[in-house]
Picture 1 (cartoon, helix red, strand yellow):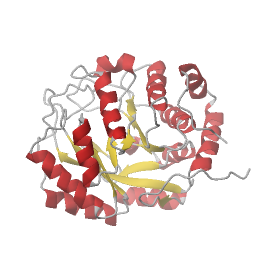
Picture 2: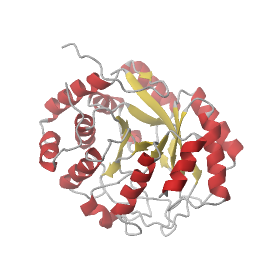
Picture 3: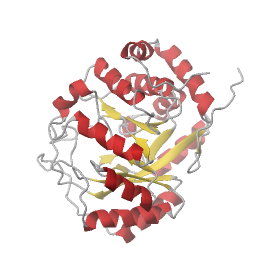
Picture 4: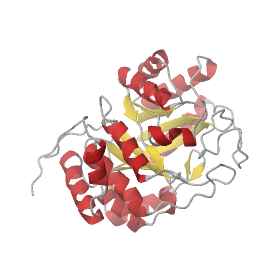
Length: 328
């Protein structure tokens, strides 16, 4: 039986990450079955409620105002529009609905009040409601909690050492402060990162180490493969291999056993067989719908077909991760 630990060393994580890949998949799959139903995958929908025009300089992001990409700037959506999208997502099988706004940080204004109304509305539908809005103060986190927010996404993106190569408009401590504010408000933390941005393996291990040594492991850990976008500084980066994704997913599963490990951006470039290997390695959550904010994603009908082929079923909303007795 694996034990929940928050005192992992980088050396321990590096050893797991570099395990021969078939053994790594087996080990991660064994841990996965101790804490989760192997046939269940959480289906989430991510909607961009405010698109583009962001003042940040994240090198991977087409929504940064300073880059010349095809992303069109759209002001914050109306609450009614968002409710319609949430209903569509629920009818298509999603049990978590995440709303993203291209802001550097949340400001206490009418737009934030509107987001609070969106959170209330989606929460009342019985879905897990998540937001990703940039940096948050403790008071703003509490307001979101009071409105019914279930989870807040704020990715670390990469290791602290590599961070300034990707983003200079904020620092790593700002990221960690927001995660702390979210956790103290008793909102589930969703935090992961992106691989394929030019980082080294030690940066991937460093990011996993930071996540696994937080006071509490994130409830959700998205693992993203960079989708290069023309007009951004990372437009010429090579595609990440499925084996690199598997190493990240499997390592995350072993060191953070209770977390939902989310197979996120980059899935559109993966075959059903490659995604199946990721599920075997411990991934148990995906984003559904043809867009992940502004990047392509598999269509609902493709995911439905994949679920049928792999005999997977959507995980119910608000299900607790309970340790199960493993019979070997």
